Amino acid sequence: MLNALIIDDEPLAHEVILHHLAQHEDIKVAGRCYNATEALAWLANHQADLMFLDINMPALNGIELLKVLANRPQVLIVSAYQEYALQGFELDVTDYLLKPVSGERLAMALDKVRQRARSMLADSVTHEEPRCIVLKVDGGKRKWLLNDISLLEAYGNYVKLWQGGKMTLVSSSLKQLKASLPAAQFTQVHKSYVVNNSQVAAINTDTLTLEDGRTVKMGKLFKHQAQQLLG
Image (cartoon, rainbow, N blue to C red; front, side):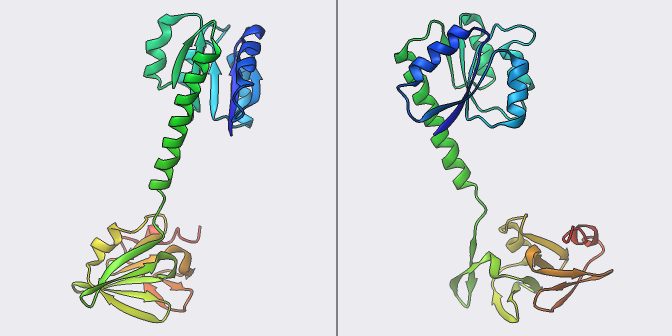
């Protein structure tokens, strides 16, 4: 289900869009505004996946509205003026429809909306932070859940991977291993130590203590960043 916002100063334009949308059960009209000012106020308190946007409106036109919106939903421009089409596509609108809009033309535009929505969802899944990591151990490979790792300790050309009191020696440099970890979950606190942020229990002047009781030194170059881990 996609939540839609209609923005047009002509009541008849609202009715035409509503009439055509009756054929599309996956599009819900969550709001209706009659000028850009109303739309800005509505968007400040509600979320839309799609906007049906007119161009020629009083005070602030549709193109100007798009330029001031920081996080825009998908946009279908519905206008009687085709000369704004280039500007619209430069602002990444999904489609540009000329009035009067037919049901068939709107259906084509909504197919584009659905396709883009699916693509955006796939991209968000692809860019999710990893939950596990595979590392070389004793000539083979092994997988760890990131949440289970409490501490990574440099050890020459290897890294001591700690899970509480249990240690495994993995074949990697600390620098290489840290680069493959999500920055939001792991922080380097010393040239030899990387900690799991969620495992930090206490922070003192020069050390921090992990949930398992282990104490880790903080390096001068990393101290400021490390001291932010508990807020």
